[in-house]
Length: 155
Length: 407
Image (cartoon, rainbow over all chains, first blue to last red):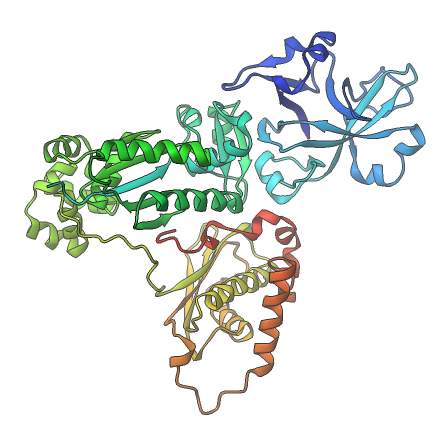
């Protein structure tokens, strides 16, 4: 399962970086600096495009954080297609990403992935990454059974 | 008088550089491009190479050596676009260019009066990098073999014209003989037994002795290393003596339906090639590489040279049944068509069935696929490979890039 994404540092506006204190997520593996968003972070965050705006929201829901939402950071495409989320007032969003991390393997992503944005009972916005069964290629590359639903590409 | 010069242009870590053209964010990072199944690195950046990762290494080993490495799925359609853009630029600089491989070209490197070969090499390198975005290295020397050795030495992003025999010898003295294209480990071992270890040892060796040991192939290299061109520039690809299609089966499989699917897929790919080159096959060979067991092979002479899918698939099935050991997982398969003939020169058989219907079906299939997409209309035997056909990049391989001299 996807456990982190990375974006070029310049992909996020400085105002957004400052407002959410994202500088601590900066990472340097050579070339341009990047911002990494890990699901295992103390406060897991993800950038999302929603109604034409780039925002930073909580990645999924942890045990004890909300009673109405499922625990985890992912949702299956089949669940989305079943209409489960429409009953919660959820919205489809795009999660921009240049890299994804799964099974310890960082891989390149062209645009990003699909997500579902929903509010918990405390009106905190949370995003779940939409996943589907891994393709053969993705499965070999990451040894993972699930992959994110990528925008405009299939690995 | 200046000797006639040959140039060699080689893209620096081409697949990675090609990905960096469209994803500049990857510049400066350790990047590996993965092969057809996502298991092995087929190209790596210099940053990844510096972590000790070799081409062909499995991703799980790479991950251990370079945890922050970034991996990508190969995209040969994109690499061909950039390869042809480079080729077109080199042709503007030179009247004769050989499309040696997807990322390597040989060319006539004789600049006009007043221009130096070194300036020519630098101008070409800079122009290709500026226009296409892929860093390249250019080597210029008195023969193809020398030019390639020069560019290999000048990497990355080098430009070097080496035309002085003394400078050539100094270079050859530094290079092991196995650096010469055409001298692999077995030949190098035979040469070592004669005390030939460096390229210079090889160039100074007795020519007749070299020929005796390595046949005419070795003698050609000997002439080339001594600055006498013995390999001409092939600006047009010579006609194929054999056409083949095949490769990995996406992990070992012993499922007969899936194997038949691969057989049909590879037969369809082979038919495409036969049609493109307007030849028919007189003989078909099938190789099946078993997982942890010996390779099976069988060949058959076709009753009539043909490019018909149904006849070739029947022949392929016949060979496959004698190559594959039921129950054993097969990991790779290759179909090779030989005894290629132009249809017009073939003696028709007395009892050959009319093939008007088969021709009409083949034409329809070609036209549908040309319009809708490759493999849109295909044999029903390929149905078990739904996952392979769903993946767009699986539909185009490096061997599908035509006109190259070598793989």
